[in-house]
Image 1: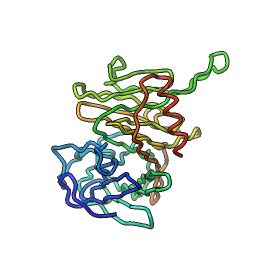
Image 2: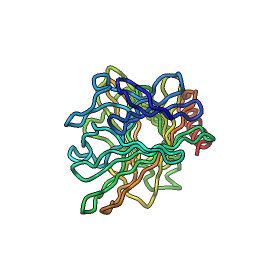
Image 3: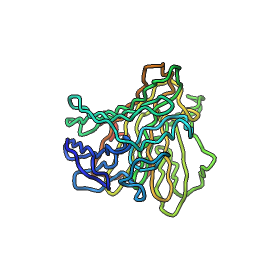
Image 4: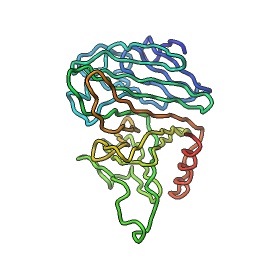
Amino acid sequence: MEIVAFSGWARCARIVCQNIEMIVTLEVGPRIVRFGFVGGPNIMHVVPETAGKSGADEWVGYGGHRLWIAPETKERSMQPDNAEVEYAVDGETHIFTTGIDKYHTQKEIRITPRPTAKSFRLEHRIYNYSTYDLELAPWAATICEGGEVIFPMPPFESHRTNVLPAMPLVLWAYTKLHDSRFTLGDRVLRFRHDPTKGPNKIGALVKQGYAALVFDGCTFLKRFGFDPTCVYADYGCNFETFSRQDMLEIESLGAMQIVHSGSFCTHEERWYLEPETAPAGDAECGEWLESLAATRA
């Protein structure tokens, strides 16, 4: 670990695991503003107009990876994260904590490098310091520079053997399924960034618990949870992806939870970065993604 300057912020924590690095600004956030191979391209998108800034009264979109609150509301989700972040190290774990907002919630991201697995474990916590219980879900939103998001479809079964629904596919009011950025296959759904196209979004319940973003010859694999006994926000999503002209998001959500006064909820992701790209064909891509996730637990 070292403190470095990055993208206009003078104080950022740099965390290295094997040949992969993260940079987390300490001046706003918590925000992971760089993720990539050492010396390689930055997968994170940092908004040029707000890079290096802090201290605003309203919520600011800096880019990078952040902890969000679902269901999304302007009042609770979009609380400003423009102040300095408390930073501590506990053994191998790096802890980044906000102040308590006006709704008495506090956000924290705990990052643990896993050198033997060549990955990072991210634990996202939301604390409730109010005098009443809250119902919410932690939401891990990662804003990337571009590329293509790929997530798996449910395994095929004949209607003669399984007549029940297998997976919700969730749309927003601005979702356009005829958008050329989407490719809906039997094995995977692909969503590409296009700098000429505006906002579009889709969500799903990905029971396999993984999705990938392919960018500039690299594959960023996220692993996240699915619990069949739990309820998920946004009509049952534990995964969502959003894009507009300047970026592409790969997001996972924890289950909806009752967070008692004085307690916290948590949501875990595991991040992997591989120097490879996805096959073009649907069947080949499905096999590749399944095999990649199977060897990275």
